[in-house]
Amino acid sequence: MKTVIIIAGLAGSGKSTLAKQIARTFALRYVSGGYLFEKVKEDPAWWETHGAEYNKNREKDPSADLAVDEMIKREAEKGDVVIDSKTAPWLIKEGFKIWLDADLDTRAKRVSQRSNISVDEAKTRIRNRDEFDRQLYLKLYGFDIFKDKTPFNFVISTDFLTAEEVFLLVSSALRSANYV
Image 1 (cartoon, helix red, strand yellow):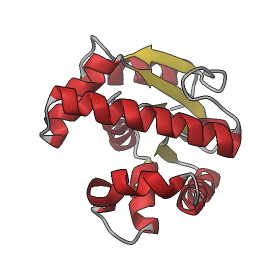
Image 2 (cartoon, one colour):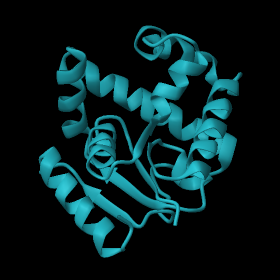
Image 3 (tube, one colour):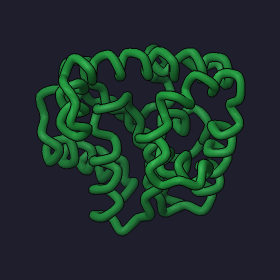
Image 4 (cartoon, helix red, strand yellow):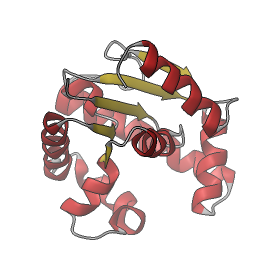
């Protein structure tokens, strides 16, 4: 069996943290949609330095989004991978799919800390990015990242859990499903 674990969620939900820990623990490859996006743009700091500016043009030219999604599909075909991606759960048929949920306040606090910005600024950026991504994915693929949770095997709120607690719950779910 090819192991494909896909972790999705909105900014600040904990998906990258969880994906990296699962990959390390179970000796799987880690693939990040955000990292691949930077690779497509050939600049490792691209998202942080140009991402907000680029969002203005993504709807007119979604070629980078489409290229990253194709790269993610190819990585899933190889197997033995944990994928951190907002779109992969809807685009890839196989795999154990996990949605991490968190309210805006929780996500803003996390983004504020990691990006060294105010919580209010983080909320503004998150709201804008969430709605932009929602509209783009509706247009490109026809799914609503806010409402459609049908692809997921496991949905968990991370609001009141530590990263370790989330990892333990997800690991237990993966083991119960005989996936790892």
